[in-house]
Length: 118
Image (cartoon, rainbow, N blue to C red; front, side):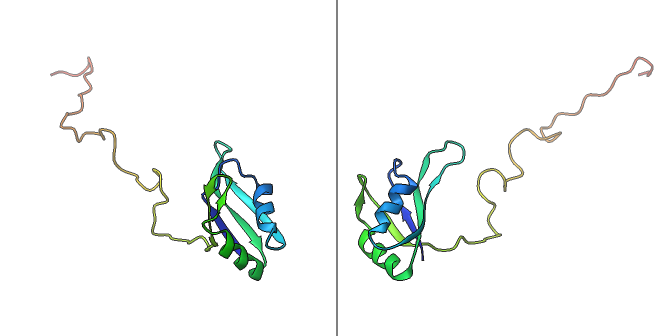
């Protein structure tokens, strides 16, 4: 069973998370998710353990206080592959911004050359 744990204190490590859940049974893996750019915890993680032990851990740890914060513990849902979303940030928004070409009402300057007669 894959378990989602959120609202973790930023000081909680993989080992801390594993230790917390080992009270309920054997833990296959425990991972606190870190921000790639800052290296700081994002405040959530995942724990993999057997179904019966996992359900007991969810029942007892959901809304429990851990390291000064009330954590939320639930069955992890698979990440949705939603192709309709733009992906956030600026990736999906191709337009906007800037003053774009000639649309501002200004005519482009003529290229005056000494060889041309006017």
